[in-house]
Image (cartoon, rainbow, N blue to C red; front, side, top):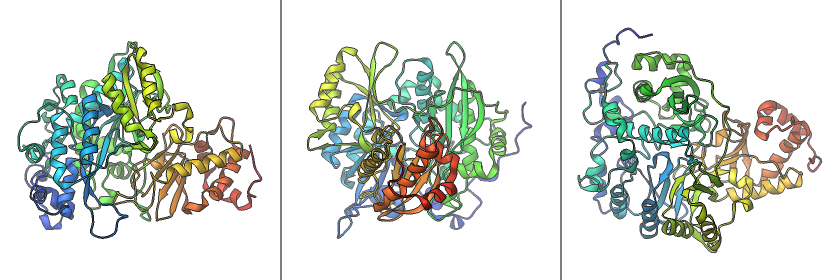
Length: 605
């Protein structure tokens, strides 16, 4: 069913917005006056100060960097910069790892941080070194562009490097979508490369060149998807209302938390394994604000099926719908999830169809979701192996006898291994010759890295964001305190004879939700220096959001908060019922009732 011809696009799409600049929110004014992400950054990078102005910092985010300072040191602020890479599909070639290893030692704080969106962050870069660091990353065929800012962020995919066609399509299209929505402004090469071309084309761009992504991006169906903007045909000079996240996977593999994305794309193949198209979900997102009821975490809704030849056009239509209709007045409500929530999925789909010009077909039935972190040894399916190396909270460092950073460097240097960053802040070495398995294991042991079977399953399942001391948004600890929470939960589970129970736990230092706490079976969300909100009832396969159980738990009260809940779980669970599913089924009121009369130490499994 085709649609009637589109109405002429609103004036705003053809000429500068009719709204006077002054009446726009400050961040929106700033985007327009930035001249496509140049000003006032260019001028601020040249000053003698160690930091940059607030406005310049907002623009710097689009270039992949955040200005930070150590919040625990007294005296004048020691401004430094965190740099986040863009690694579509999480791919990390060996030469890039070597470069990052060297840069972090020479210009950073000596460690690297694996994120929850399959890329590395480097902390502690000084303003005067930013250009050197960013230029060297660009020149090796990588990038930091669009790792932050109101644009499409790093495109995620299942990190399992299986050789089967469905997994290949997931990796390939992650890179296609990364290219489709990359900011086009020349500001990036002007500022960091003095206007020259990078010495190497971005590796992912080369790999998907045959898709003619640039042509597809500029293709204008006359329905208002593409703007009359020579620099940014998709984004325009105001970019998107807020950050935008895309994830791609295969049916059954929810290792990447697909329901937390603005757009989730699932590969659909025919019986011969050939690509037919994609199931598309929309409107997921984690961020919320404490005490603001109109902000909430949301799992994505299933929108429908799209044939492969139309997928780029449909994704452009979704982005255009958010660009033109997302809430630019209230930043806390600017993510696309609020637009989908306000309109409802059926009306949102109609809105997307009005840009796309065709009907979106019904969602195709697919295999049910499972969660796997892909750690340990696996066969790729092409005679090679891959190995998932668990990293506690993503911190790649050398500290005492634990020398993970040197171990990865030694493996990369000796075997020239390609890696993939995992959605759970860990790393996967791929394409390993089976004869090298022992060599890789012995390098890890020599560097004090424990084998996977010695890692507590609670630690393997858990995630925490960096929080203090460098994150400006943190209201409490996360990464630094999570190991002690895991130990305390482990002690409690053992005491209650629940030692085999694997509970997916996550922690963040603030409500913005970088470590995706609102999907976990049990989450701690910082709301003060020593207190956390407690969230329960997420799914062990990450398909629904949790709910807030306790507004404020003192960090010393973990055991007394959790013991009654676990007691009730022991007494009332169904067979094989997971902790998150149990909490979801019984709900907050019943748990609170049970806890009132619970006698500590009275229940054991």
